[in-house]
Length: 343
Image: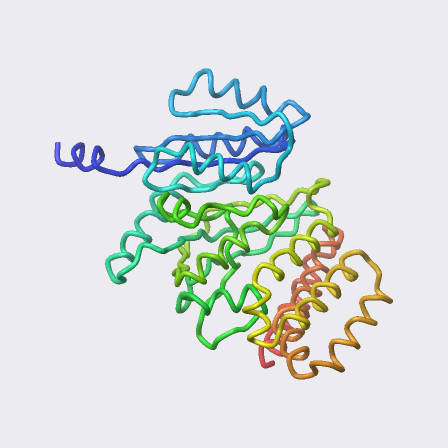
């Protein structure tokens, strides 16, 4: 009887899913949501103008599931706008975002909720975002472990996180983990609404922008150690490098005054241009920009390159490897990591 009363008192959690042309994966995402062992949840899905059979698959589950609600957008407006619809429709006290091509273990909600509530008992704020650990799975079979922010060290608070996301400032012993991806986020619904959701003008990296906005308000970023998410990497037109570049510039411009006060606005503009040329396979232009950045900001460039860019380059070797060569390269990178970490 006591256990039944406790279950009835558990808050409603909204599982929020955006969908776009995900006919091959949306069923997996829906089933992982419906199979959560949390006893009190609803699932809301917004389809963002899919041209494939995604809507039909979602409607099939909606027709036979009382706590699944579906909203359809006739045209594609971007992930941020879809997430804002989810926030406006959510009835839960908490929202957990799931992606349309990912899988979440059945205890994801309960583990993140418990961690968030326990953390709230020790701080005097509700501005807390709780992320989940997991692994990212690439089409070639390569798997990368993703530890949640704050899971293995001191959680970043406020500008500690904003500075990391904006210009890669790292503080010793602060655990930035895998950043702040919305696909692994659980937080109070009031947090999303008080911050007015996601910026719909940003086509990609809207989750980075939201995390910066939260950080600027003094938000806390925490995460669970248990790996509960499998993120399956997919490629589509809305994920191309030019859109990523434009979105990065949009974020820099939003926080232009703050970045200028830190003396890094022009530096980050050049860094994003370098990243764009590199990902566009324009190595000559990438090298040219890198030399320019180094000549203008030698110390910062060396710190930035050794702390993140070098690891990214090694990571790309695994992404682009044949399945047979993944293990060989992983062992080589494992050997190099202690040397890289010295810097």
